[in-house]
Image 1 (cartoon, rainbow, N blue to C red):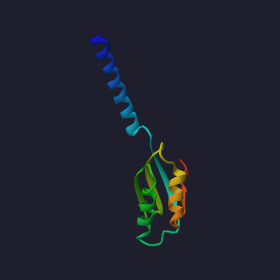
Image 2: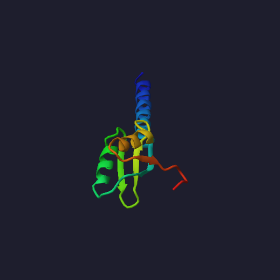
Image 3: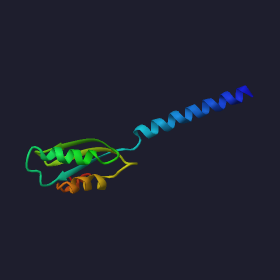
Image 4: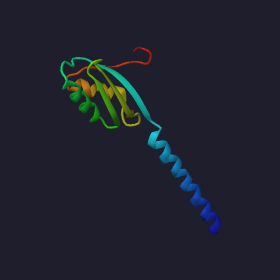
Length: 102
């Protein structure tokens, strides 16, 4: 009986390790956006903060010179549409750059 209990415990622990490893990194996506109406050096700060407030966003980089934003996010918690909407809501229309359209 002890042997079966030990074996079950080992299997459960291994399963948990696999689930945790998958959940930690398995859903990261990166999206790039064009961001309109940025006219001064503080505009990217507003865009970055708005995008960072979206649940699931992990990292935001906004480039004033190219008028673009690159966002790393968890695709289970959010999507590119919600991230763009956050920028739109603070007055800076963001449009997803589709793969190959750059």
